[in-house]
Amino acid sequence: MPKEKLVCSSCKKSVTNSKGTARFNCPDCGKTEIIRCAHCRKIAAKYVCGNCKFEGPN
Ligand SMILES: [Zn+2]
Ligand SMILES: [Zn+2]
Image (cartoon, rainbow, N blue to C red; front, top):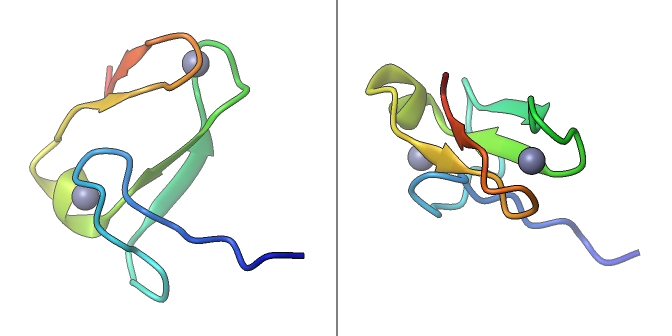
């Protein structure tokens, strides 16, 4: 299995081995995993689901 590369869904930075990262499935379609780094959580940066275009964090 190829090693999964984790990048923040908002800022596209690598979050591998980063603390405070949140991973969850899209609240709307549940098919895409959203990854948010600690920084983007703090500033409430937007994320967009690649599958259904749901925009968070709300
Ligand atoms: Zn980020
Ligand atoms: Zn979605």
